Image 1 (cartoon, rainbow, N blue to C red):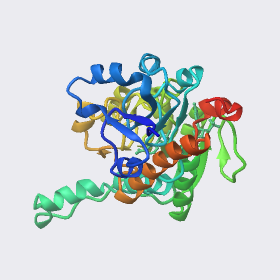
Image 2: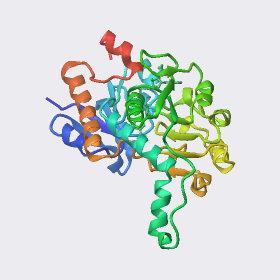
Image 3: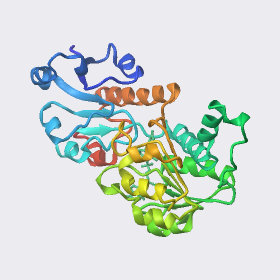
Length: 323
Ligand code: NDP
């Protein structure tokens, strides 16, 4: 019997091709001389897409009439039009849960780096300035602070537990309150006024675009620290550059940017921002676990007709069993 055909638009973590080998035929589109010709020729065979970051919109889905499943690598899937997929009966899956601890560790690392200027201090040592004089005292400390989490979901809760272990108290803003001990703020502005660390970990996409704007940054205040491990689109980057330049807030630690891998030149100029190249989940064990979940979704769908981790937009399809 012919193996189900999976389209891979771009390269993926090694665990994905390794896990698919022998069970699926994989079309490695980025290696094709003429990707459009390959797509046109093989469209009727392609029943699944294994995807890591390639934008997938309604037009792309429209080219694949036999498509049943898009298995996306990563928990954020804002690059995929999951509603358009559901309208066409195509299920979308992501990789939640297996990266929570890694991303939460990164968020806390970024917070400590930002508050205590650790990257700046290390650069100071490497430049040989220590022999001349000690590194200046940092204006801020982590102690006595309150962290407001925008998006207290799986990763947000893992961040909250870590923050508590550091003695930092936690509050949050979601669209809906949760059954947790942390104080809930129904608006982001109220949360920003109440805390002096704002940690962003909501999904990206149109609904959260520029949620953190100039008004929110002003509310955070001159001792405020912004940490973003969510998506660059959630923060108005131009407003953030102004806030950092004018010291409307004290500092920012960013793992994600509006136009990755391009970084706003204003962010590169200011010395009160710590910038990481989107490494939140980027360890070998965690990326392998994410790849394993991509494979598990494909195998479960084609062996048993059920995905392991469908996104909420696919819930109705999965319930009806007609994906
Ligand atoms: P979850 O779905 O578990 O949590 C998301 C939380 O955000 C929910 O509590 C939800 O609560 C809240 N939320 C959603 N929309 C809004 C909104 N418009 N306003 C306020 N709150 C909102 O997701 P995860 O914790 O698993 O992941 C969160 C995000 O982290 C991902 O979508 C991804 O973009 C990002 N991420 C970044 C990584 C990196 O490398 N830097 C790695 C992994 C993830 P409610 O529904 O009540 O609003």
